[in-house]
Amino acid sequence: MSIFERFFGKKVVDYPSDELEINGEKLKFSFFAHASVAIEYKGRVIYVDPVVGNAEYSRLPKADMILVTHSHYDHFDMMAIEAVRTPETRILLDKTSAEGFQGDCFTMLPGSKAEPFADICVEAVAAYNTSEHQLQFHPKEREDCGYVVTLGGKVRIYLSGDTEPTDELRALKDIDIAFICVNQPYTMTPQQAKEAVEAIKPKIYYPYHYGQVDEPTDVEALSRMLEGVCDVRIRPLA
Image (tube, rainbow, N blue to C red; front, side, top):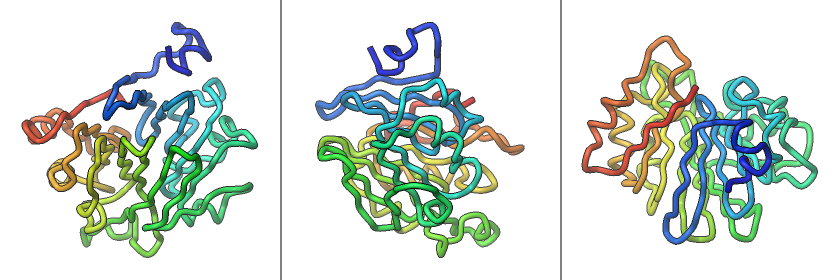
């Protein structure tokens, strides 16, 4: 039984989720909406880019760790953070979000590393646009972050945040599970996401950060494009 089920009872909350065992470690993902997800690992709850409109955070278990990729409203939401944080919560923020944060936090810069727990390591990966017509959305100089979260020294999870395929992304190694954005016109096209997945070769790929813009993403077509490359798992994000 997951922390979410113990906290509520199975009938109280029903967010889409996946439970899996990989490299000998058991974990669970809960999918809220857009870029908001949760990871459960050894009794701990990690929230990624919590935003009030994406989940009822006031009714969710408290956070052991919170990750924020960048300061846009659909990723950084103080109301959601306040709803789940405690004095013991480890909060890791990109530079711009940290500048507007009230309280203690780890400020993450691309290339930096933090170990908020003895068995959890977080590495920040540069996240930015590379296409000429999109540079204003996520400029490299703002130093937004994606993250590689390593659990127990065994499982490496990449959470892209908002980015296009970059040299920093392509250089990632030994990624077991990847969350890579597919959100036009701000982040990756399906073709770019395909290129990113082919570059880092995760065992499992979850397309995420799509569905809240006028231009829809055909994630089923993306899944077909990646047949034979990795296990593509499409989950509801609304």
